[in-house]
Length: 356
Image (cartoon, rainbow, N blue to C red; front, side, top):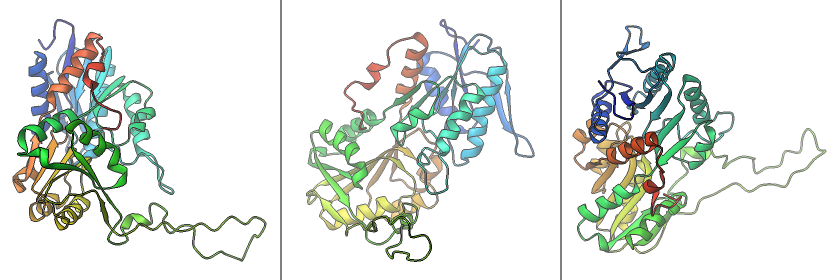
């Protein structure tokens, strides 16, 4: 029977190799068996979940990694949570190391805040608590009507730097944009290293229209209603690329929470090489690595990309030997144990700042 002395069960929300592997690592550390369930797609692509054992009155943890087919993974999680809810599970806790749609957490023109919608969907399906890791914006926690434990991967990545990067004392932590400076500063202070920030851009990017850089227009419209005249606002304009900090003769370590479209990272690596950095590492929690990311990394000046196993990326690793993986199943398992036993989670955040 998959029931620990304290009466909780752990299920995997999909049958993919990566999710099953992470779930097995977690259950092995917890000393419980993986729950018996079947998750599959019908011929018409509808998601179906069959729970093969009784969960009445139990606390259930659902482990769900997010592969490339994000929407299918979300439906698997929702359908499994609802199946467990209607089977009279006492508490249903989602273990979602990478929270999908976390980039869509701000209003963009006539768009929507999709991460808020997803939070509401999870609550409606029956989830009462989630465990996640390195939310893209910490304010996302406010979208939920139930508790959220936002774990940090930085201790594992810092340990990798100390153990796997030769002569890391000659390194400098780099933020590829000013918005990433707080995270980079946190790493630099704990590793006792210097800090550099890349600011500016080489040319106008596609995001210009999204962030309203060219709105309102520079020319005042004199036709139509003239009752209220607003001050003429200047369009935003980023300066040419500048590296604030000395990277010459140093190992450059770029830190971020997500590495997906690697164009910005590749461009940053080229700039750092031009400024004299002799090795370039990238440290990120979530390795989405979409589209041609493995090929671009392989052909770039980047020496190594280190990500955690919050997101499946085995195919990308086969395409690019520069991609390395850090296992974070230990902290996920400990979070599950502490939550079920009613223990404090503060131990998991010791010496970690809110800027990570």
